[in-house]
Image (tube, rainbow, N blue to C red; front, side, top):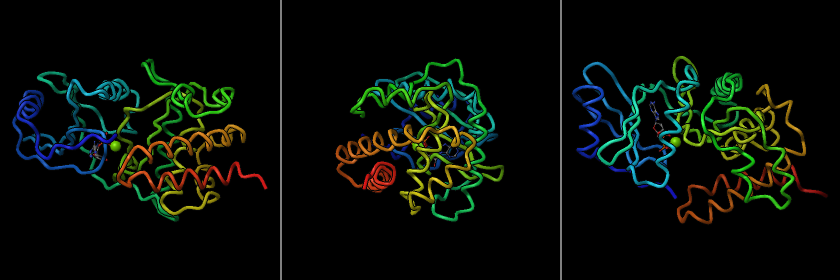
Length: 267
Ligand SMILES: Nc1ncnc2c1ncn2[C@@H]1O[C@H](COP(=O)(O)OP(=O)(O)O)[C@@H](O)[C@H]1O
Ligand SMILES: [Mg+2]
């Protein structure tokens, strides 16, 4: 379930940020994203930060530590982490603020080559010595045949959450944020998960696979593994859409159905 976003930074969080970065000059609201209890642009006299946070007793507070752990490995692909604080009831991450809008995933968008290039850069990062979820484990509840899970295993570092709100288009290229669900698995899984978001933004399944194929790992994707992933994604997005009374997941549910029908429909 999405975490409700606070409209103002609580005093305890403000005090922690000031202790780490000095006096705050201005705070701006950040609306995008679903998981953080607080997310803000914080201006100090010397720096502009993006700060996200969860209460320490939040069930997903582990994602904050995961983001902090991953940060040193994804320099140049993600905005740098200035600090991770856990105190006074809050887990806070302070990042370098990345100026740029969210990526445009519609067909023909000039953001797509830059996103694919940054994904290719990520594909060259060796899996870090950090505790990460494994894709075959994340998908274990969504297969009929447990042997399907073996397609997803691998040692590549994967971002996995390709919502365009997690992709900022900066002057220096695409930057990926929100690494709390970073995982290990087969290298082709990231472009394959990306293509679902492309379908949700207007690509046909064939067009979306053509974009995904610009990623260097796509050629290593076994067709039967892609078929299995399409079945898994359809189940996952059906479950997410059922669990969320508002409609935010509906376009992804439709996209996952489109891709599954493209991969697995038999005449
Ligand atoms: N370093 C950053 N610089 C500028 N904006 C950011 C930065 N990181 C995230 N954002 C913006 O804040 C939003 C929420 O951050 P994100 O890490 O995705 O949190 P959530 O877990 O709530 O989705 C993003 O969708 C993006 O628009
Ligand atoms: Mg996000």
